[in-house]
Image (cartoon, rainbow, N blue to C red):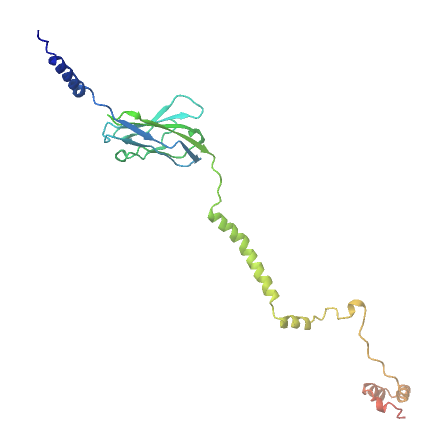
Length: 252
């Protein structure tokens, strides 16, 4: 008695495996999107919302980029920017006229720029990239933006002006004082020697008067002449210089 051949069954299994391998759909590649976790900016600054992606497929005209915003207070995300072969800027709303496309898809760049940031722009920004057939993986990434009031800063020009107004007069005054301190003593002595006629003479301030010349004693001849009736001789005698001490004896 012969056993039945089973090889046709084995052939069926091999054929089924080939069908599964060749006819099954190929696996889909993934895409990865990256953005900074947090961004900080001051009021009225231009903020760069960076977004990069990596894809196993070369970007084509089917690639799309979407940016959405969710306020800090909460709520549903709002898509305000779209890119598909070209940039579609927001026609109205909070971000109108303040968005610039900075992306370069061929280099994996999908960034945008937010101009004149305000406190109302605080919130979460989401970057979504689709590049068929790479549509799975991590096609989205989030960034939390915090805008704070601008802190006044002192510019270098302001500091220079302040220093000029403070240091320049001080330097001039210092030079004048140094010049007076180093002034030649000769000029000082000359100023002391010359005195105005109306100045108080030395000693007068304290009631001390210079000694007056002593009056010459009248001799007997003078007395005689005073009694004389001849006034001319009297005046001549008065104008005569006083006799020396060695001849002070009476000549009568």
